[in-house]
Amino acid sequence: VPNPGRIEQLYLDIYAQKYGAWMKHTREKLCLRMTAVRMLYMTEMLSVYNFADLVTFILAPQEDTSSSNENQSIFPTLQTLIIRLGVDPASEDPYLAPEVYDERYEQWWKTLASVLERRRENGLPVMTLRLIGGLGSRDRQLEDMMIARIGAVVPHVTVEREVQPLAQ
Image 1: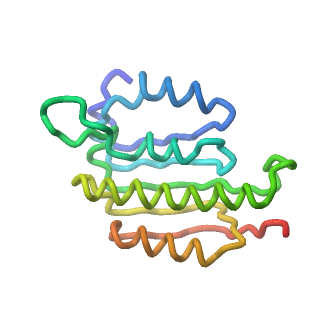
Image 2 (image 1 turned 90 degrees about the vertical axis):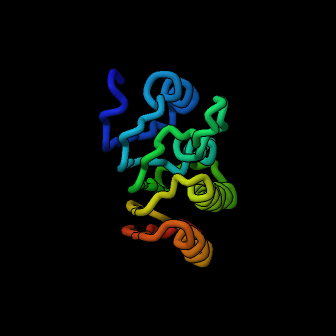
Image 3 (image 1 turned 60 degrees about the vertical axis):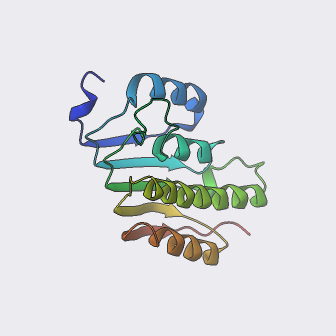
């Protein structure tokens, strides 16, 4: 990216099959402290093997390696986060046990909440979160609990989704 300080909106489409190489190249070539990004639109497939690491990598404040004690983040001015969570049980690995799917889903929520809490604690709060796309869970109570947790640190949370029932 020739001038990352001028990009104000960014769309990241995460392609699961290229995860490892994508993360390395994104860190080295694309996400070099993009100081003007105020709106980030991310797509995530729940089947991404280490999606919790990916959420942390993209959104969390980074360890400060300089002497300036400045909050380090790829997106330090991020105000609006839009996440399209692509949950499509029909496209999941047919050998993936429902319990594994549920564990990944729960971990995704917990990681997102934790990262948003860390951003706020570090003076980098996200003000608006929009969750869109197909969400699917046998545990609606988990979703409600995590949305409430996120709502404690993000003033404007909107959930725009299609609930896709999972096979029992």
